[in-house]
Structure formats: structure tokens, C-alpha cells
Length: 318
Image (cartoon, rainbow, N blue to C red; front, side, top):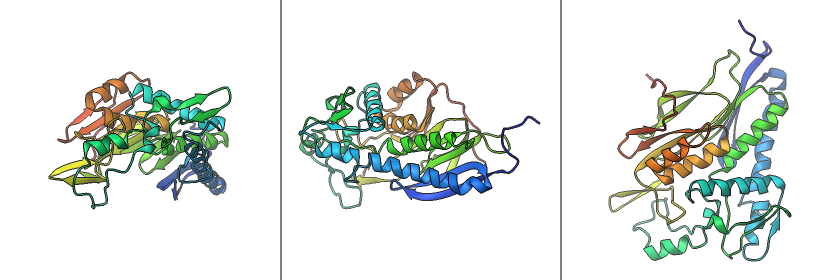
């Protein structure tokens, strides 16, 4: 039998914690005596990322950028600058379907059961007035970020978990952890293999019954993220409105129940799962098909499954 590079004592260890407002499950292949050190390291790295990108933490660099909207540029770390730079690139690729300035959206849609009628066109127009990734000004020479209009805000809700998982994976790999999964509420980043040499497997949830899996896929040194409308929505006049909002017009997206994206890293998987949902089936699949190492599965409103041409279809769960 070919050696897998693991010590015979390497085992799978798991810790579940609430981090970044979500359920993180950290699974590592490591020696038992090193397990607690590596799990603690992972948790601290995710907490560090949260302190960097959280718009709820008044001491974060992100909050400082938002406070200075319409006032002046803010010097930030190279790490945050790079993340914002990449997010803007994805906004360009998706024609604004993904946009970190979405954080400025006024809460005209409420999903707690109190909403009785859809917002007026005037309210929708006003709610998106400060959303435009093209207006975010970056100065790479001085590492500054400037939101030129008062009321503009950035937020990393659609990329933060994926980025945190990537950063944690990189840190753990530098410590010699040869395999693991960072599972951020169903969005997974993986590396290496199980101790027995088999690939990690990810199950795609059935939107009609999220507790059930309709297909399993092997994941090799890659990431998977899913966006779905089945967790939060409101029904008005017999029509169901998803909590996934198009930042370009303030309207909830319809016609799709879930989007699952496979990508080389968690950051890409996270951002494109949201973007494809908003772009729609045809444009979304066409976009994903042009990106190296990426593929997607879309379940539409009639439960029909659409997939990019390069997807490897797996055997449904029995």
C-alpha cells in the first residue's frame, strides 16, 4: 500500500464553535497530542479575521472605512486592501451582482413576518442609491480606501466566511497540518485527504428538505459554497420573496432555489454562490464555465437541476 504521508497515529479531530455569527466546524487530521493546539490556532485565526473585516466591530478597519465615508481616505492593512481589491474584481466579472458596497442597502425588506406589502419603487430606488462598487477608491501607493459619498458602506457578509476559512487553512498548513475541512455553516474549504487516503465528501442539500442530501461529491483541495432561498423569505400577496437581494435594484431574486459553487478556494466559492444566484441560470453558468477550476449546480424554482458543463455528477444518496 502506498504511503499517505500521515503518521499512523494521525486522527480526525473536530471542534464546533460559533464564530463570525455562524457555526464553524473545524475538522483536522493531526496527531492527538497536537490536536488542541491546532484547533485553538484555527479558532484564533478566524477570530482575527472577524476583528479585521467586521462592520459590527467599531474598532475594525472596515468600520473605520465606513465612518469616514464622504470624509477622507483610510489607511488599511495590506491584507484588507487586497481583499477589497479582489472583491472589486469579482464585481466587475459579475457586472455588480456581487458588490461589497451592498452594505449601504436600506432595510426595506424585512423577513421577520412583520412585512405586509412590498416596498414602493421609490423606496427601492432610494435604498440602492449608495451602492456602487465602481465608486470605491483604492490607492495602492498609500494603501488607502475611500468611500467618496456620505452613506456609502462596505461589508463582507458574502465573502467573509470563505476568506476566513482560506486564511485558517493556510495558517494550519504552515504548521504542518496535512489535511482538514473548515466548514462555515455549510460553506467548506478542504485540503489533503482522510487518513485512509480517500477524498473528503460534500453533500448538496435538497432545497425542499435541507436536512436531506440529493448528491455527494468528492472535494480535492478545493472549496464549496451554497446560497439558498429556503432559509429566509417572506410571502406577500401569495408571492414568495427571497432574502437574497440584487444590489443593483434592491429586489429579491426569484426563479432559483439554490446555487452551489465549487472553486479553488473559499473566497471564490462564497462570492460566486451569491453572484450566480443573482445573475440567473444562463448568465451564471456561462460566467462560471469561463473561470478556471470552477463549476456550479443550480436548482431552479421548479426543482429542475442545472449544472455547468465541467461538473462531475455524483451518485445521489440512497
